[in-house]
Image (tube, rainbow over all chains, first blue to last red; front, side):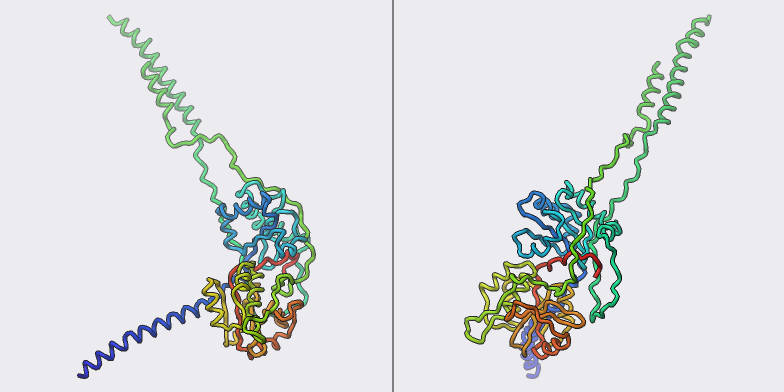
Length: 219
Length: 208
């Protein structure tokens, strides 16, 4: 009888336990979704400004989707597009050097690379190379182009939490230079040719003149 | 004569397999135009961080449940959606939701609409608000004992910038600790959508 009661108790407990476990899992997943916060405060900003009807603007949009390097760059940054009809466009208008502009900024707002109007390269690859060059050549773009170097702040204010660490996008490394192809061995060929011709001519001469003379002089 | 021809044939074929003839071609490097120097306007330090244009701010409105039942949570979320470049979601909220809300209610409604978000409630988790401001998102927070929601548009070591949907014309600056005390006595609910990139900062001249 005890065994029977135990079995019944088990049968009741199993679905109850199963239900509780489900509830817990749901609760956990909810908490997880809420608690995992994207730490993207140091992420850089990539922005296109301009008239959406402008072919250059459309080209930039397209390149950022289709070109491997540029789409990788886009995926690693906060990407925005602003056209003059956007309310927010006015906020940046005074800072734009040209009508259509693509701008890459670090998390603090400093411009790391920028192409505008007629300076926008003709191909996606050239734009990628240009941006990559600007990122490498930080001294010329980051300081000289801005004409004023960063000056130390005299009174640093304490911050309760550490500022987000600036995380620049990682662009595809330069492709390693291919191993130089072995150059055609012209010298060996020339030598072989000279030797071969020499041997051939010698053999031919020998056969046709000396040997035939010998045969003809034999009694 | 046969040997001569054979020798010439050998010369012709020796060492040719797998060798490409290099005619000295130069690899093509994409042309990157030279650009003139750019001098940006001397912008002041970005304060508040979430500098929402006045035209994009949303006033609170009385919901269908009558007097006293405002829609402060929805107005706050609409402003954050607009800041994150999601006007479409702000319009969706405006068209479908009103009256008061609370953490689980908002979570349910965001889930229905596939809206990603993050929140904290009743945990006095100040780091959440710091995170929201450090990532330039801002967040809605409860005040006045938990009966009203405003958005935090800036937080630093000394001050907190508040944009109240009952007074959208100005940003109210409150001492940090004073704000935190009020928030912690108001259920300490803070919430922000995670639906779009924050707008870029202005092109500052110096590293701030």
